[in-house]
Length: 223
Image 1 (cartoon, rainbow, N blue to C red):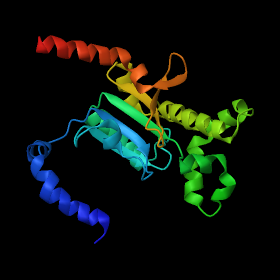
Image 2 (image 1 turned 30 degrees about the vertical axis):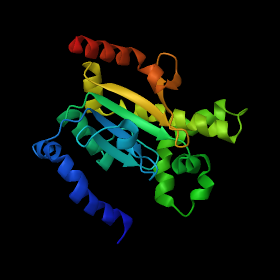
Image 3 (image 1 turned 60 degrees about the horizontal axis):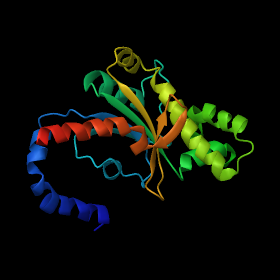
Image 4 (image 1 turned 90 degrees about the vertical axis):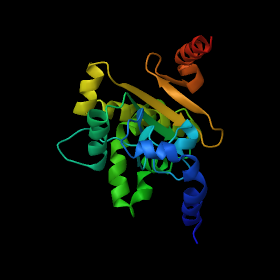
């Protein structure tokens, strides 16, 4: 039996019974806190990174955590974004890139994608990020250029998100927040984009004020 099939059996016999009440409530509908867009890379486990339960994240995954700019062409990402934002009314969208990303390595070296025409075309949505690295990162080593690309790609995809009508409308109404993250597979670190400084900072630093407010609220409730 494949390992993943054995996992299903364990889920049914051990995990599901412990969370049966949760799944019964989820059978009635969903109200996720965020649309979480990340890479298809098998090393990215969204629930583990965010410590969330089923029903808390509406997840879209693809090579390179890419959001194509809005057009009249209907694609899977476009439809999923529209549904999450306009129907589910998620209050947050996260775009999460990661280290050791094969898609970003391909974007930096498109000549190696000649045998993968669809991958090559898909990675065209990262071109502006690649050009930023080529223009600003000439003095960096390969690792520095890749780190810059990971971050610039997240920023670029956030900009693409803003072209989607449902996103633009809810942003204008102050009903939606966008977040850009980069996850380091080796260290477990997650950095978040600060649009006031244009830099990526540690998640605990970026959300320090919100975390402090939550701690105060919990203290007041317990008092």
